[in-house]
Length: 268
Image 1 (cartoon, rainbow, N blue to C red):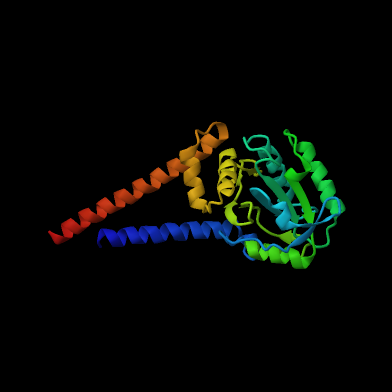
Image 2 (image 1 turned 90 degrees about the horizontal axis):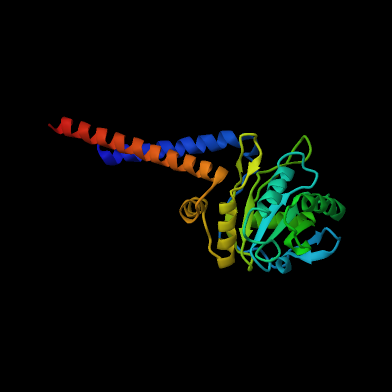
């Protein structure tokens, strides 16, 4: 067996491993996946209701790099923990909400009200260590037509659960000032199971959105590794990723060398 065939089989096996791992990790969400629509623009005519009960145009709200957070305010699962992590990351990154970027949380439940949005907004603002202007983090509700149009265009798929609520993934979607989708950021998890967003990853996503640069998940990881000097938890996470990559490359090299040796012995 030549080296090319060996390498091909290794590559396919690695892809299969990651595919199976991902499917097992998100087994409960297999009907509610996020399909990345990088480079797609959000329609100009989408209307929602803000926390004060005012009808607003989504296009008017997206006037700078913006983070879209799909949620529902009565969620007993991942929605609130992700928002809490956002309150933490707001105080850690160098960019300022309302000045350098905005966050828009949008309920996927058409039955929720602006009062619920206001209560969630007040709760999240109280957790932020950095002062946020009202325009810096906006909480919206809407009707089913506008909700589904927006989630379809962004690739955020969700399902109503038979136990009540919704099944969905936790993800942050970054768009530029023109509403173009430039990056999807999937939060990691701490040992305790809480959400964790690397400040460096968040800053890079905001930077990409400010330039209108479409960035894939792989490019985001590489930029994080090469553009920042990490500290604390960031350093531990990145060292683990780097060690895994080096180990994988080492295994591939060893197998290829063994394959070449086998080929040579066979030909001899």
